[in-house]
Amino acid sequence: RGVRYKFAEREGNNITNMTLDYARETEANLIIIMTEQEIKTANLWMGTYARQMINHSELPVLSIKPKAFIESMNA
Image (cartoon, rainbow, N blue to C red):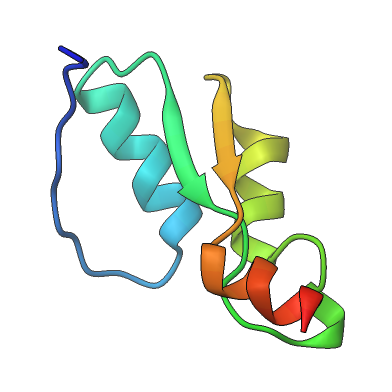
């Protein structure tokens, strides 16, 4: 649909900080993330990194739940 995007791989300890730094470097105007990192009771609705991203980002964040997670909740 003509949506411009960038993909990059980085290594580090905090995925939230790395993603926000990369978004600033590339002058992004939207961050898209997967909501869940693991299927655990503590992360039932939103994983730790997803929560940090939404709370700390100065950019809009679109969070998407993985299809497999949604299907497992309906089983």
